[in-house]
Length: 135
Image (cartoon, rainbow, N blue to C red):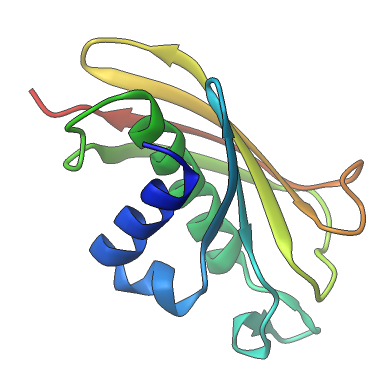
């Protein structure tokens, strides 16, 4: 699938992704580049993007890169997600780069870098996750 197809697939299957305006900017090899545009409903006290929003972006970006690599994995599910919040995100679009680290028969291990659109050098969060593939 290409970026538009993956985005449409995720939004159709996960209504929250559509509500958050989750987007796939690009798919390149074993990487996916995703975004959640800034919106006031995603803010937590202190004027920053909420942790659950950051986690949702990372998880959906991992799902996107897996969908782009494999056919018939709609039922791939997150079995582990570890997140380290590293800096306060600015009130602006958040970007995520998800990479496949290991693609096995039964599971996929990914890594995600999350950052604010104006400062890609400063990580907002570092995420690792594992997806279990359907048998």
